[in-house]
Image 1: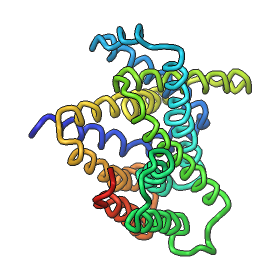
Image 2 (image 1 turned 30 degrees about the vertical axis):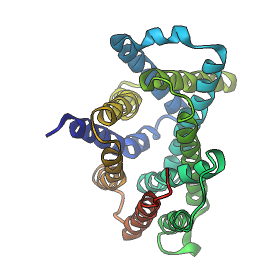
Image 3 (image 1 turned 45 degrees about the vertical axis):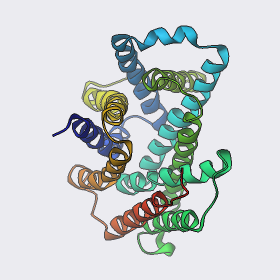
Length: 290
């Protein structure tokens, strides 16, 4: 097997465990605390990666505006994204939250039209509509009247997370920063913001030995290791082919939430996910999509 597919497979596997591990940690930590710990551990790991690759030296060429820009992107694409996703997972079933999170590819289309001035085509409009229909199907579980307030608020947070990551994806294309170095700076920004929040709110906490494995997994493997492995997959393989493999992730996530969290398998969640993915692939087939 080609190494790019091995790297992609590692990332897909790790990302698919995000909802399950986060749900388990939320029994003893809150969303902000998990964001803080994950950002810290990811920062340490990515710092080691950049030192090993020698990319850390590129910081000498950074100006104040570069640090400000990466700090902004880190706040949007790492801090806000992860915090809102974790809150969503806390307030609704992990499987539902992770599926709604996959609205972000469609949000990149929306922001591409707004920021990059790409033309909104009929195909893109249909794709956006389908994706939001998929979100409604997942959230309502087939019945709009049965949506609880907690589930609805969780869905809203997951949508905010998707919007944040969609915006981050577009803004990240605007500057040609080294992907390893920029990812380090993004996590540094997330760590700083979450640390300030925890200190200001005096939201102190202690880590129990039983939480160690989950924290390390969430803070290193599902974030830093997964993103680094994905970057290597894209570096060695065909970007279009590799990128399409990412849509295996939410389907695999359903397996973990069912086996580990014992969440009942809901056909409506699978139907909603299928609608969202169909919407994504419809817009990907748009010949005018850059």
